[in-house]
Image (cartoon, rainbow, N blue to C red):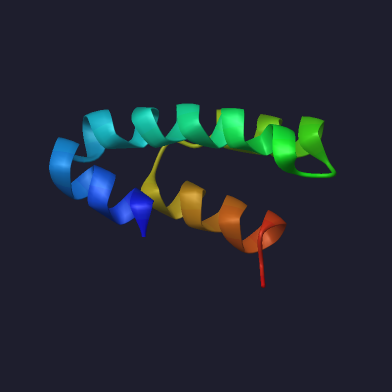
Length: 59
């Protein structure tokens, strides 16, 4: 998973904001773009990231 690799490379302090930025930009492809963008913008931890992915991108 990209998130885990990014956090492993940068550490949580830098990796979470890096991935948050990707998430905000990636949200434009989602049908609920505004809600998903807002959810990614609030991500502050790996648990937050997982919650957004589980809610908006479950398979």
